[in-house]
Amino acid sequence: MESEIRSILQRVTFASACEPLQEQRDRLLRMDAQGLLSELAFIEEQLQQPTTRQVQYCAYEYLFAGAITLDQGNPHLACTRLEQAVCAFRRQNDPYNEGLALWLLMLAYSRDRQATAVIACYQEAMQKFCRWAASELPNGENHADYLRLKEALRKSYESARTARPAAAPSARPAESAVGLDFLSIRLFPEIIA
Image (cartoon, rainbow, N blue to C red; front, side, top):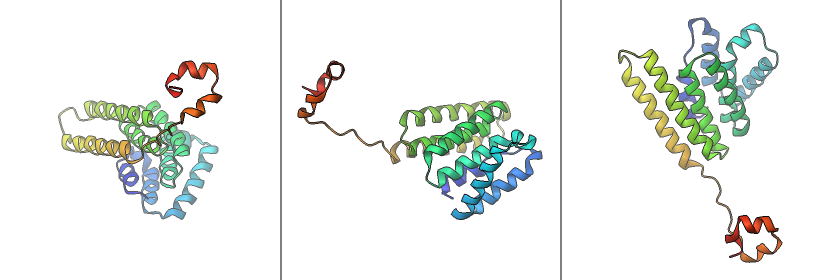
């Protein structure tokens, strides 16, 4: 698994009753590409047939599915799964894990060439981590960990913004304006100039 995705997944926190999910995450971190594909198929099947346990833990399942899909090179599908993880963590009022899901979503949007969404995810993830720190670290305990988390997110954001820029639109020659309709000419007069 890609090191940045691995690093984010290692930060995921679990309630004490979620030991099977923690074990699942730890297995994911040790798997090769083929194992990840098998695990993704298993997770997708679980998400299609929700049980009471599954509904309770679906945020983690969506997060894992999104991370695997992103690692496997399908950022568009990863965006869908990670958006679902963000919503599920939000419903559970878990700002820390929601921030991690937003961080992964930021990476997926970057690879899917959605620059505006990258910025929005970064800003929202920072807000979630600030909210988490304000409620969970009131006495400044683990403040250094919080600062390292924010710095890692900032570096990841800078990398995501610059690593995969969207393709520049090609310049059109003046001759191409011949086929434009009236509305196009009115909206884009510089094309025929």
